[in-house]
Image (cartoon, rainbow, N blue to C red; front, top):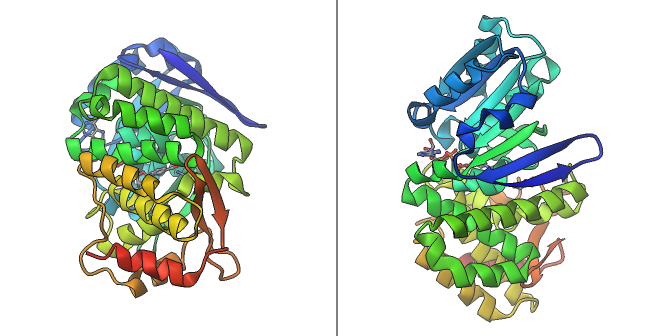
Length: 362
Ligand code: NAD
Ligand code: GLY
């Protein structure tokens, strides 16, 4: 097991990474309270819930262990589904001392975190991410929330967990398409902050595609370390944290346009990464060879490298105008100055943005 610590001014927590951690209750024990609600979904629950419930019931501090199973899918990441968590908590009569455990991918993690931020004005929660994407990104850093039909992740709160427990064995049951989607976010870290990690990814891509455990654990560790460093620097995204959204302005537009769930979040980010690299190159910042390198890795992972069929320039522009990085009506994008160096800027030519969008049309 490897452990990282996320050090924030008002809160610190561990990120444990390793195989079989879900069978090590002592990692959870210090963070438990008398009332526990495990939040999971109809796909992950049948695989991992029973063992977890049994371990929790054996903990002396725990008096009540209950769970709620939500419908599976990005299309259910909205206020209505969130309400199912609140209803369960209220029906159980859980107090402010309860602890929520998020057992699942990023959708479950984001919704559980938001529920924890809001229930009785804030209770503790623990992230137990079970997809590659949630292990390298969404479980760390405290961004929580739900989608609105008019925009992705538009309703939410910053709420840091008490612990992130990453059991890499859970990836064994993850479908290939979901696994590949997580690799897009891993690639993001190399692009924005660590050229040496990007080269390591190129060298180890075959092992990662084959899910070689050592390579996967190393990729998760290095991704979480980069994320923890950026979040520690700028917890509530006043500036630098926005670089973690490389490709996401394009990607969120794709997710919203296609209807949540048709494209996986990581798939939309994959195309978005390429579009951001393309625009960065058109602006004269980035060598075009980097675009080719990203393209090769995405194709090898069978990730999309073109826009969805029929998504027009206007569709992009309308949806991108609702991005959370828009300030006073001005669109800001995360772009690459060079491999491993991202910037957040509104200083791009709109003609170049049009060329990039048009270039990726199917
Ligand atoms: P997801 O939560 O929908 O999980 C993907 C699929 O895999 C689901 O069907 C799920 O039930 C299934 N699954 C999960 N773990 C499994 C396992 N071990 N075995 C078998 N099946 C399993 O999607 P995701 O890619 O994990 O997360 C995407 C979400 O995360 C998006 O909503 C995105 O906005 C959000 N996100 C948030 C942040 C953040 O900082 N909070 C960062 C990145 C992404
Ligand atoms: N996934 C972007 C962030 O956590 O800021």
